[in-house]
Image 1 (spheres, rainbow, N blue to C red):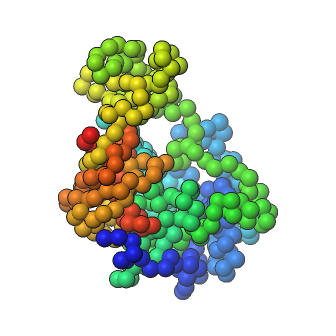
Image 2 (spheres, one colour):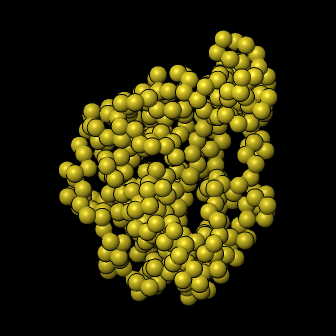
Image 3 (cartoon, rainbow, N blue to C red):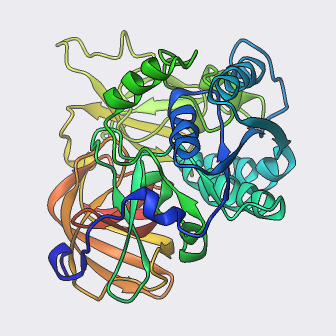
Length: 379
């Protein structure tokens, strides 16, 4: 299986508008969703902006600036000339996303809530709400593209701006969700989006991108997590058992972490950095050692569970593909061995800091096939 055997020209996003008159845009207050709404309005559709409020606990202007984001969204909607509504999915977010987020951390894994948030909130709760309001489809400011395969199915394709591509976070979407979704800025570079926003006169043209947890904001993570999970300090040791210090609670650390370990500036006496190699839950011990390329941080085989495939079916056994085991990572060439609702990946080259709880996302060239949650790794 390879990209050339199944790829068709990437659909012009406007072609997905055929027969559709009303679209609801998830308007977040950021520049990407604002330009998305503007392009749809220019295409002649009835565009309704929808601002999603999905977090209510300790919602203030310091970290979770919902009020400011709504004001930014309203100002953009006014310039574009569209209606803006607000909808509250806080209960759905807490039940479908945040509860799982806490369970994963408590189990010693490092989840990616943005992946689940997209599948359960933006493209489920929000999509269902929009359709119930009479819209034929929704649109978001994600950097991704769509195309049809030879059988008429919908494929999720990397964005034109490879550095901003967000298909990793969208890999759990299905055919039904993608059939009612448009990504109007997937064919643009981020720089083009900002230039277009300036030309239009959007008030949020220079607003910086959000980097916080989906809908929760950019809070100090350890302080935030400590409100919901018990903190149980324990020893920090080397693989040989040498005691180096004390950790604040295993949930606050992730594999490959270098900063924030509290080990004399996180460097040894010779200046080399310490890295988290393992979280020993049985003994509540954080295992660390020196060296970015420590053998314990390199894995050739990955076991994933809770598989989700965009086409509805997994790739064939031993298909030659590529995969990411974390978002900001280069693809690694690999083979897949699917097993019911899980799969194994065998990489040609070792992958760094493969972390249980993160997503392993597979690609056939530019086509995002789907993926699963990393359960374990083998060196």
